[in-house]
Length: 251
Length: 239
Image (cartoon, rainbow over all chains, first blue to last red; front, side):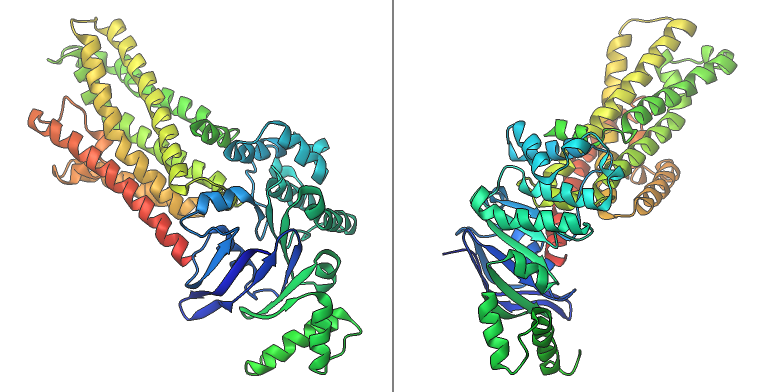
């Protein structure tokens, strides 16, 4: 059963189409990886899910609810992290999470719990502007995870983390559906990363959804098109290049 | 939720800035009386009106500059590390964030006015003497000044909410204040410009225009809030 569904979702800015007729199905209780090169439209899709920007046409339902009518109900169910960590630099890590906690009307213990999950407990009293890039990233993740929301939308959550941090966060995301009984939509431009986290993937290029299914189904599809499937990164690049050539030779 | 907005301004220096600004503005009549008390003591009017007529233009200008810098600082902390995006993705209305900020800024402005009223009362007790109905006159005058400040608070926040770069909103605000100062003396209509309204005192406004100022202030408050609401809707469509 899909918890998030889109139908012909389109977003246009003047003469530029960021997202074009995207029809997606994100199954409940799974990790769905949205994969695409920079500027493919991943963040725009996620922003539309959060109601941060309105679709030009098409529709989307989240747990049978729709924007803008059910905006508040939808946002109560979603924890999000879009593009880059967003925080108040003049507040400590703990105070930042407390702001989110109060808005979501969560108990005080939820802040400590989430600080522990992302490994920031030791630095909770440090001002967020003094955090390293990796710590800011963890704070952003914490503000998405707080209150154990049933849906998590994470846009490139491992950006700026060191290899150990990447590994930790990747394992955390992988374990979330089981631990928190939630659905995770995670984006990345690295197939190798998505492969390690996601149950289902969607490949997007120039705003078009090129593929939706499992990694095995993706391999099968590119093999049918005559591309190599030995290396998954090559598979992804082949798929994107094939689409670019079809669009008029832009590689 | 107003308390939440108050928490957001922690360590921004906004509260000390308002307290210091209030004391600075209140220092204007103190210095004036200290150096030129002879001139003012011989003027024919109530002591409060004498002090307001001779000092309020400078005091009000400092107050408006405080309002503008306060508004800029409040939105700067939202834009600096993209916190506003997090707020937009939470189940609260962005228009409410604007209104809560307005409530905080209005409260800070009220504190500034209380400081100024306190210092004026001290000056009256020290250089003049208290007179019958002084308290009522003080309340009426500062109540009017508070209301006249509200449109500029809402407009300053509207401008600050438009630009991620604080220097744009600060620059526009400062230019608007100086325009307001110049324009307010040119004609009655121009004195209704939101940044010119706080310069008006009850004693210097014609008695038949007082009600007009009050109505215009209330209309401006409503219009500016509606414009902000529309801007937020349009921004969501084009962003």
